[in-house]
Image 1 (cartoon, rainbow, N blue to C red):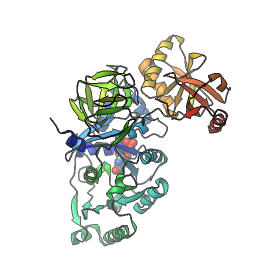
Image 2: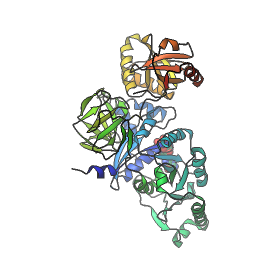
Image 3: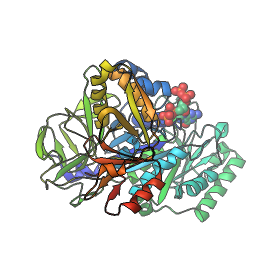
Image 4: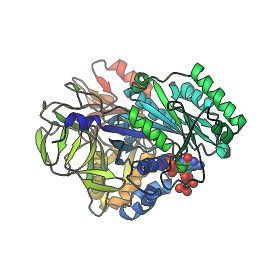
Length: 531
Ligand code: G4P
């Protein structure tokens, strides 16, 4: 039998955070190329186009030019098993990227050298920061003209408040881009724009900084500037410090050009060296070691209709500790009973393969026949009350009543709303006194309404309109003697119930919340849904 500890130590799970167009798809593809999971670049993009045929709802992704879904990709590199969690980059989209980050052990922040740090990246960065996970920075598109590299480092510090340590350093950019100097290996990797047009993996040509051949190839000016820059970084920059990197206080920085493959392998080699294996996770019963004999995991994403031909739902489970085996019986604390995990999948781009075994750090897809909700924990050989609370429902900030244009489609609407709510695409509420006459939907980002409308039409054949509500703040409430009538104030506060019959107050703004808090001292106002 495989050694549990060894297998867990080989796992690396990360997510890429970036702004749309920074090159996430391109970098992902190149990582797969170097990981040997694909042999010719273009496959991910090609698949992106052909996915159209198999799953309608991704049309939206195409129309919008954004990535609506998070997929999970697996590949091996240098003896490590890598799980790459893809996060949608649009600022308005949803909670999905936040949950995905909660399932990852570290993040790669991808920055376009011409754009610098953009606001949505900042939001995602803050989520990583709060979790204290390591953040690797890849500054992309060096084959194009962009900001000065020193200015980009200053931006990391000024905008994100994180110190940086360049692992490699670029010489020139745009049409003058000559390559990067690896400060660890003390060699220059030369850029050859014509080498492969980025389709196949390339080996960089490497030379030491004091090699006369390098001075000749770079030209005197560029070589002198490199020597000066390196001295400046040695004196004024932060020294390499793996402990500070691992607790998220220092970000190692890499420069490259994903499109032409340049710098991708240098990055991947350093990344697998530095990135941490799965860490101890905090559960409701205390810390759980990843290589413990207790199997535990948490559902961080549910995706319905990945393949409309089968109408299936997949629950993505992050294994937090122990070993997963096909057919195992696990305890489902929320349901209060055991279930059998008969079948599980891992994902390679849009392909799935059945798996027999997986370990802490891995993400597996489980067929969901309605047993799972986001945030559900599963456990075996451990206490039945072991759960992970970090993936709870986030408080929505946009609300609307949903109306169906053809009354006869009402049943379909209810079915669709239930599914999409369980999946975490939206949150669904009902009036406390009028039931589901006109359901209320809540979203973290406004674009979720567009996604909802599109998916209801495409998957449930229901045409809906939204009537926006004047609320911007929601709190789950707990407390003795809570009376919904006392909170019903037209236009400023409404009491509703969520899908699981927990009372929620919707308020116009934070002021209204403060006012309610002052008035109702015995009641707790929670920003996350209680378990
Ligand atoms: P995303 O997933 O983050 O949204 O970005 P994506 O990889 O789709 O890349 C966005 C655009 O940036 C693409 O161009 C891509 O080719 C380009 N790109 C990515 N990495 C680099 C790089 O290192 N250098 C340069 N010069 N460009 C890069 P596009 O014209 O929008 O799409 P396409 O026609 O190339 O597919």
